Structure formats: structure tokens, C-alpha cells
Image (cartoon, rainbow, N blue to C red; front, side, top):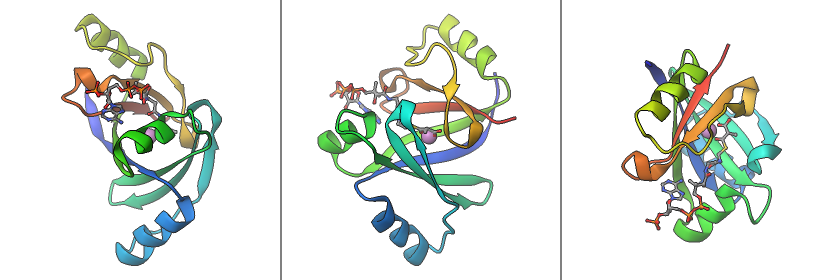
Length: 134
Ligand SMILES: C[C@@H](C(=O)O)C(=O)SCCNC(=O)CCNC(=O)[C@H](O)C(C)(C)COP(=O)(O)OP(=O)(O)OC[C@H]1O[C@@H](n2cnc3c(N)ncnc32)[C@H](O)[C@@H]1OP(=O)(O)O
Ligand SMILES: [Co+2]
């Protein structure tokens, strides 16, 4: 398995439009548009930066992972997503190594990507997303 690059950094926010203002006007990034991914109970908003992107995450439901995260920790950095060439192979390899997988099988993410999460308890307290884009 090879991690190709940091695909995106996920930031949990209370209000997409308010957060978008901050990342655009203060940090000078450009907002690419919103997309709701119901399976994850989030609306995403991507802002490219170099070879990677910032992914703003607003929860669509009080019982979603982003709402729960904000309730416990407040707004902030929620996950890092690494691009991989072959997500099925990567998951098989990580499972073999005893890594605790949240998703044993890839799921559909934003922008047509296939994604899977590793449990933060396996990765030094950081929620890791693997992401394959074809
Ligand atoms: C659209 C897509 C895309 O990019 O295409 C996305 O990104 S969707 C992005 C949103 N989707 C996701 O996050 C899906 C994957 N996440 C999950 O399944 C969940 O959020 C878990 C990570 C399993 C946490 O679940 P849950 O909140 O029910 O468990 P919990 O609160 O008991 O947390 C268990 C322990 O993990 C810690 N914990 C929870 N969320 C964490 C996070 N984001 N980063 C680091 N640690 C985290 C808690 O503090 C707790 O630690 P202590 O035990 O020490 O107190
Ligand atoms: Co993500």
C-alpha cells in the first residue's frame, strides 16, 4: 500500500456558509461548491489548496459523526484523508496488520470518491480516511 498524497483535511463546522466566509476571506481559498453525502450525514464544501483540499463538514443530522464530534470537542480538525491507488488492497493490507477498520468495504464519498475510515484508536488519536479517485 502506498499513500499518494494528503487528499484533504476534514474540518467539522457548525455552519457551512459562515465557515466558508472564514476560509475564503481570511485564508484566501476558493470554494468549489457543496455536496451532501447522506450516508455520512454531512454536507461537504471543498476548498482546494495546492495538491490537496480543505473539506468543510456540516452535519445534516444530530446523530451523525460530525454532530457528535462537535458536541464532544467543538468545531475543528476531524479527519485526514490520504489518497491511495487501490483502496480494496489497502484495506486488506491494513486488516491483515490488525488495524481497526471502521469501514471494511469502501463506501461512496464526496466527488465520486471511494472512501473508508480507520479507527482513531489505531492511528494515534487521528481519524484517518482512505480515498481513491479514478
Ligand atoms: C463525505 C466524506 C468524504 O470525504 O468524502 C467524509 O469525509 S465524511 C466525514 C464524517 N464521517 C465520519 O467521521 C465517519 C467515520 N467516523 C466514525 O465512524 C465515528 O465518528 C468514530 C470515529 C468511530 C467515533 O464514533 P463515536 O463518536 O460514536 O464514538 P465515540 O464518541 O465513543 O468515540 C470513540 C473515541 O474516539 C474518539 N474520536 C471520535 N471522533 C474522533 C475524531 N474525529 N478524531 C479523533 N478521535 C475521535 C473519541 O474522543 C473517543 O475517544 P475516548 O474513548 O478517548 O473518549
Ligand atoms: Co473526508
